[in-house]
Length: 103
Image 1: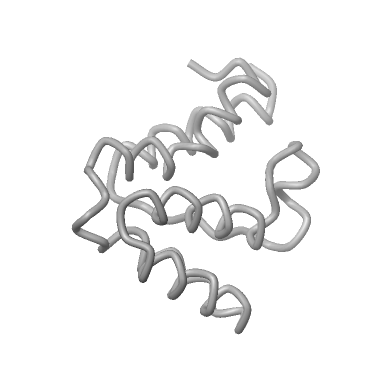
Image 2: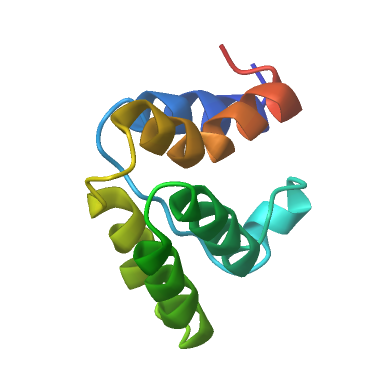
């Protein structure tokens, strides 16, 4: 197994637990993933379907470069169904699977 596949496999195993991953700037872009601001907007759009106020706060924190707080707002919003939270949070795992063929 090559190094990117090993990293992807380890990441997927880690994501089976409650996890938020933040990596250095540019890491995701090299793997054709959204950057963190784009990902927070993705979470805000998802949150807006359930609670507009949370989406607004996610955007506000993102605009202040307080990305961990923005992600936490999404994670703790009780109006977003658990399955929807997991689907949105699993964006990176799905992208790693498709990019690196991780199992």
